[in-house]
Image (cartoon, rainbow, N blue to C red; front, side):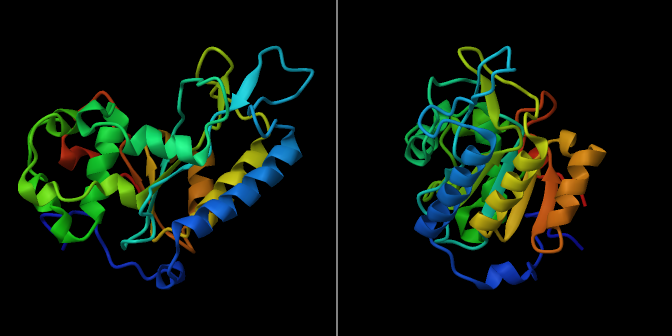
Length: 251
């Protein structure tokens, strides 16, 4: 029977969970892997611009993944895989700048995606982080973060302990989202290696789009080594209460 307070939590029996991992190790691994990807597909390592003469529009590799400043300090290690980040920030977003975007922002200022991810992470962390105190709230996640939280849920920011990357890596320069694969095989290999570099104990793919056959095949390829799950995307226009964003969509 599922835990009535923290649904979908289950014992992690995958071998990766037995190894300790530091944030510095993860960042070093990701740096090396992204350098190979940039060289392979022709991405400028400073600007993120893709150099292809046949491209009618200029596109940029948006960002390195977000790695929380305390990633590896708590178990389980959690990696979220979102859909895309639709804004062009004028340059390739570094690890540090990406971290600052999340950690230096006031809790009340998080957008619906990050607010929902906050509660998804909270649901998976040990009980003392306070999931039980907010699990049954009828308010949307973003609204909850704009109000005083119960004391049990205030002592640590769950996002410090997680990592976040995106399925789609590109943005159109000066515009925004570019939801196409430009080097699909290389991009999927990069994503799989991002997961392996993070050595997560749980991988959460966010959104029903990951139930599409091609995406689900990629997810299944990771399931033998990692505890992989598909949960709702937190910014979906349907209900956004804490219980809603931790609903299991797959498996």
